[in-house]
Amino acid sequence: MAAKYPVPSSDKILALSCTNVGVGPGGTTAMLARVSIVDYKGQVILDTYVSPTMQVSDYRTATTGIESSHLLSPDTPAFTQVQQHVADLIKGKVLVGHSLWNDLSVLGIPHPAVATRDVALYQPFRNALRSPNQVIGLQTLMWHLMCRRCQDGQLHPVENARAALDLYRTVSSEWEGAIAIGNWPSCLPPSTFSRCYL
Image (cartoon, rainbow, N blue to C red; front, side, top):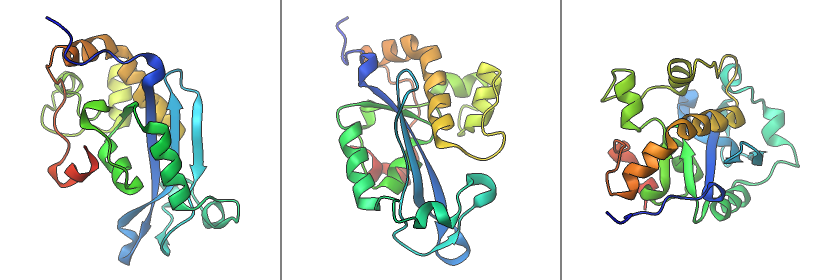
């Protein structure tokens, strides 16, 4: 059977991870604070803090490591600048990550669903952990599938992007082989985030 979707070359693959701070009452609404992108080899393509567009009510420092000085520095680029830069970097690329809908949502950048490889949605990973219908955290996936710790202390988006990429690489032949013949091996992202996908 002819390939329905060609297998992407390694130079077409990027991994993305974002760290958010809280805005609004109680800091429950997520706002982008840092974004990291790595290439297929795990080399950092982008790692930057983002100047806030609203008043931050919770820096979530205990888990993010982010403090006001990171975001309010005059050297911290504006959200629109970072958003455009990320959009340019990921255009035409296959995007690897964990719960990518959260990242795409805070970035305000939609991406073609067929060009995403979300380790949180990959059905064989869920089946391996006997959780076919629920999102499994990156830390749990890494520990159970790769015997590796991640996110032990504070969240680090470069580490998270590399971890998602490592998970993808362990099964990339099977994953891409399924897609090539039109068998999408992943669950759908939450429907409330459908705007994040083209």
